Image (tube, rainbow, N blue to C red; front, side, top):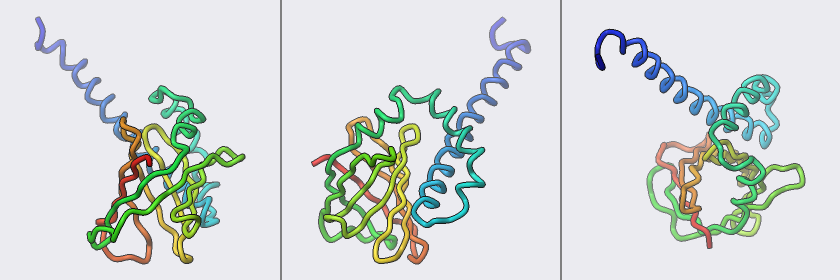
Length: 171
């Protein structure tokens, strides 16, 4: 009989699997952001995260329909950028970010003709970016949307507030 006592173990297993998949996604995002930040900041965290990176890579392969190289290549191009500062105020206008593929396989990002530069890595449907502007490191976690745009949040250690966002639309 459906819904009876014999179905409880199956329902519990489904609930645990769903919970584990959610945890894998959170670990992937955190690991990608930390690895990206370590690449830009020269921090020693990359060595400590190597084991997690292998787990994240395997989880990502299960979820992605595109290979990592195809996913990166699909992001190459120019995007119009809008967003908000950490205090929630909207940007004064639109800027441009250019994404290119480096020989190393990493994504290189340049805002406003190189005034700000960064490095990015695709993990699943997320682009994790670390960038440097005027000597200050920022981290962006951008969702890759089905329409080809990207949207997400960013933070910089020295800023107060937590409302910094960006939206990138192909130009």
